[in-house]
Length: 450
Image (cartoon, rainbow, N blue to C red; front, side):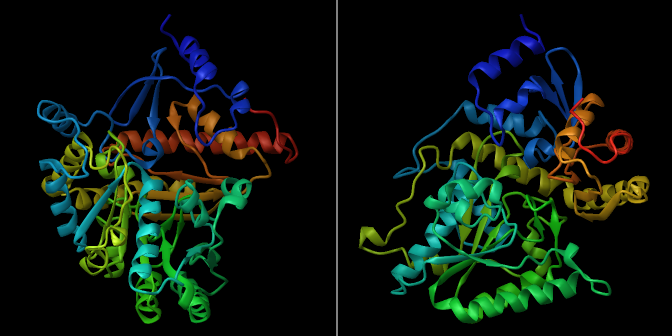
């Protein structure tokens, strides 16, 4: 057999899926995907789903993008992988050179996924201060509602209790600074006012703890798991000033927002700053292969360059700088360089904003917001199961959306057409109307998933 039911059962028997209470799939079936092309996923029974979240934010240019696919095929003919300890190869050298030029940071260290990049940056910062004779600087400041991954170090700077509370006993306590989330604006305030208030609170924290703080880590401009919390670039420029003043590092976690997602190649560029560490992953290979990296300055690199091996950065991954993944990443950079992606996205986003007027006008929609190729809004609902119900209803309408609580967001591949976006928007409006009617019927009580 080669149908949905067969693959669903085989998967349920053996695959432990991420970010999932597996028992829920007794009521909400897993979707088996057979193939993908452009913005469309196809299951084994022939039904298609528009990928409105870029398969967890990794797919930049559509599934099966020909240039990336061909780059991987070409690389297969010469070198698939070699250990990067004591060896190097053409794709990793060329990728490092290009990333350094694009970011303004001189050195690139490679990992396997986003959480790995966070771990690397945290360890580098901690180790830098140790090498500099400031071994007391061991703590990290992160923002309220931040998300930086789920390995132990990354989880310590993640403020999502659902993920972190269970593992409190494993985590090194950090410090939390208020989020500059523009949704926190009081009447008469704007996003910049919220940013200034958050900056003042951060400065108070640094004034008290800078002697023990190694770095501040932030998701520039958009906090993803916080429900696409967007904030003013003013916060980043002031953060850079404070990090310099109090001698702590600035770690920019652009795992989700890098590579054009916020409208510039890297989000921090909208504040005209340069971080001390830049974490990249997800879109770096266009969604084809796992790869992450941490970029940092020559000043930090030189603090590890020494005859004493213990002063070196000895962190490693078996697939560090994998040649196939680097070839895919080079193809992604080629597409940005040759196809004027950022300008095309800006024009596309303007059209999509107009198309979303109906959603914005709904009485149950709050805080409609947009940044680059990200759109988000909250839905007023009494349903405790809104996220699951919305997800299921959108699947019935041939769309993949994965709300965060009562926050609905669109983060489609950049290749999405106006017609495809109109389809996604229409499906969303129909779903919101369906769920609103169901909630009213149930007098505001949660009703079972369809």
